[in-house]
Length: 433
Image (cartoon, rainbow, N blue to C red; front, side, top):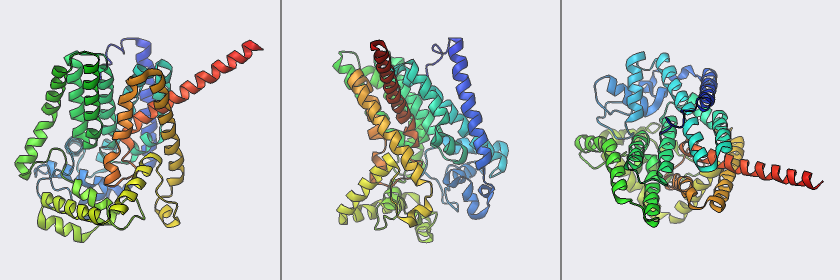
């Protein structure tokens, strides 16, 4: 993260440590209130514990390899990238499979990941927008509701991906005015780690990398060799997974193989909810039997063919639903239908929070563009590129969370500028009086 030199100031170190510790304790306390013993329900191979993540982790502990993400031994899998399931497998080895201790252990790690995200939030904000905005952004992240809730309640790669994506983005900011190969290699390493936590990171990091190459070229600086170093560093982290997938699945699967299923779930005649979960093999016996009979990779390809056929026949519905998904990603609004709100009772406050945060972030981006120019382009890429894949597949309430640090940093910057201008206006009025 390259914070060693910046943390050499003892007061700075202690202030940041206090924020991180406060954020961690807050999340652990909330975890105590949210913990649900239903997570230990043994039905359907303990699927309630952590879904596919838990099943893959159990398969690893049992010596069956990285696979079997559902209810039976179906063989090798690439439904999820490896870092988080392997981390949960380590927790299982220490505390036992599907135990209360394991649940508390992995949720505590989630809380730690979320609390540590205060650091890249602080440093990216300080580098881009100054000291005052940085401290405020770090504290806002410590209290940020989504950061707290999903860390304390969801066993999924979300909080780890959020941390790694934020650190990779911080590495990008360090590259803006540097041709040092080390800065670019660091970006490649962190990008690989983020992608191996959740492939959604690839919607943001390659476009930002290309922008950095373009900017270096425009400014007459070396870019090809540093970019090549970043690419090699990325491949050093990611290629073992690619090779493994080709070897065990007998096909080219760079990250995950489930795009076809995600496309199928989100593109069908039923748009009453933002996800038609009943079409997933987890909830559909018919789909599950198809998975068993065809195998994972063939099943995913079949679902993609079915989804593409539906989209081809219903182009207007696809465009309309994609627009609704885009609105949902930015505002959390899907429907005010009473039946829908029965299933999603917290949507009303969530709409207010997400819409306000999005509006402030866009305002902060606009202010940054007018005052700082092209240095804010990486933030624009992060905001606008991150959710694109969800516009065409399907969405969920936790899908946007890895991009939240960018929204928080920009929103706090906008609020800071507004407060500074208001203060200056008041001082000017007082001076005139």
